[in-house]
Amino acid sequence: MRRLPWVSAGAVGLIILAAVLAPHIGLADPVGMDVAHRLAGPSPTHPLGQDEYGRDVLSRLLWGARTSLGIAFAAAAISCVIGTILGVVGGYVRGIAELLTVRSMDVVLCFPPLLLALLVVTLLGPGASTLVPVLVIVYLPSFTRVAYAGVLSVRGHEYVTAMKVLGAGRLRIMTRTILPNIAGPILVQFSLAAASAVVLESGLSFLGLGVVPPAPSWGLMIGAARGTMVQAPLLLLWPCLALTVTILAMNALCDGLRDMLDPHPAARRVSWFSRFRRRAPTAPLARVEPDTVLDVRGLSVAIGDPAEGRYAVRDVSFQVKAGETLAIVGESGSGKSLMSLSAIGMAPAGVEVAAGTSGMDGADLLALAPGELRKLLGDRIAMIFQDPGSSLNPVHRVGAQIAEAIRAHRPVSAAEARERAVAMLRNVGIPDPERRARAYPHELSGGMRQRVMIAMAIANGPRLLIADEPTTALDVTIQAQVLDLLAALKRDGGLALLFITHSLPVVAEIADRVAVMYAGEILEEGPTAEIFAKPRHPYTAALLRSAPQDDGPAPEGISGTVPVPGDLPAGCVFAPRCDKRIEICDETRPSLFRIGPGRSSRCLRWASL
Ligand SMILES: Nc1ncnc2c1ncn2[C@@H]1O[C@H](COP(=O)(O)OP(=O)(O)OP(=O)(O)O)[C@@H](O)[C@H]1O
Image 1: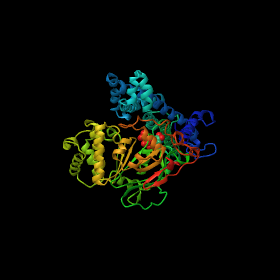
Image 2: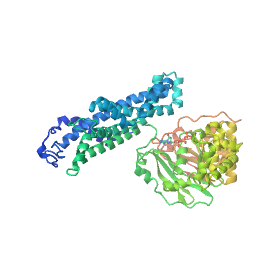
Image 3: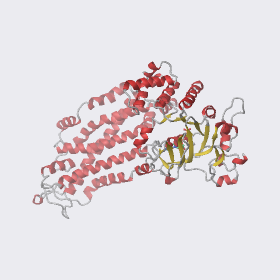
Image 4: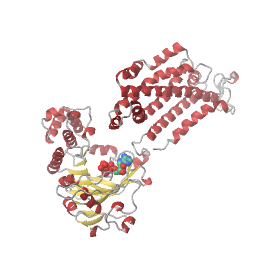
């Protein structure tokens, strides 16, 4: 769990403390008049001056905070609780419950908020106690809507289905499974509602429909200061300043709370500055052979701040040439995806490139400005993922998606892009491409969707295609077809293919060279046939033994698990699981030894293996 945002929490805490302590810190009477000193400037007894009736401005400001914040927080909290309950019940139970909760709130939403507030104030009369129900009515529908939308987006997820299969009741699913997953947007809505309630309270009081004078409120203070703006402009400044600081602090606090409670994006703590810093090249690009498409050198990637030492990728170097497939293979969690994303400047949020270069066409992808990088992505560099179902946009026809990918990089007309999209679908072997181009992703099979993804990826004729486990979600027959298609593209189009997989049979089928990755390091690299015939690292050998073979011995699992970033062994990263380990392996981190043409191993004992 991430840390509390101390600065904003401190600021909000101070404001609330000042409001709570207002009656106990010896302030002047907030309604006590001193007409002889009306509009007097700041003085030792009245640090912020006196208003048009000679009342102490500081006292009215702090007492006003009690009123304004009290009303705003009470209204936001009540509407948050009721609105969330209505939204969750309506979204999860559906049917009549949805009609009674969400749809009835939609009716309230039809009324302009200010008119609604005017109506209630006219009926109940102005005053602080009227403002709370007024603001609750105004904010209730938005909480209901946010909660309802959140429930609709998570109710179909597998973890909700899993809870149902476990026999959990509706109440338990709503409170324990769904609510924590939609808490982020609700918190954000709370911050918006509380901040805008402060403003609306001030506005209504300013119009004479809220807090009744002489009771202090920020809205009344702004309203009164307007009349004396020319003689005493500071009187307008103080309540406006208080309002602005309060709203900014509350918004920052709620954003921070949302980040703190959300477990997904690991390192929001990575500062804006560090994101900027990662773009600085660490070394000049080395000279490469002319047919090298991607040249990665010394790439190290940290989770969070590199100073914390949680490296998920350490000192990785490799090259991919035109017309060649380099397979990155390794167990789950060995850093394959993070390494390949980082190599093309796409390190996810919370992850920072700490060192290295990634050269393509004479430029370092890690040092390019975001705009420059965007021009390359989808054009010279393309990527396909494991699950085409979630990579394709479900609300657009597949032909339109391919056409859009083309138009993002080429100045062609919509009609021409559509034609090219159909041609691409034909190229990747989709039968009846004109008709299929009009289909939505859900109307296609998994294999077809993956072909569409490939068509989209190669639509602009990229030089480098990164395929991250593109066949894992497919059955064996379709898998073979997709591999054949990729092999043909590589052969005919001179594409450089970086193929990420944990499947050795797939590697054997598609790769020219293999880099074996483990705990963020490349442990062995070489031509596929050589690696399979004569592994020179115990991890490669163990991986080969763990793969099922048609007529060979039964697969042997590798005992133990891949270490996580930040908890890597001091010596060889594979030593704790290695059957060839000797004492020195626990102490010395081996470098990558060149052991032959195009071959390297990170094992101290490679020669004796
Ligand atoms: N965004 C992230 N924030 C924090 N940690 C991450 C993030 N992405 C990956 N990691 C961690 O980095 C390590 C490498 O993850 P990565 O996904 O690259 O492995 P992988 O070899 O591609 O695994 P798989 O085959 O399961 O996709 C893992 O320990 C993972 O938990």
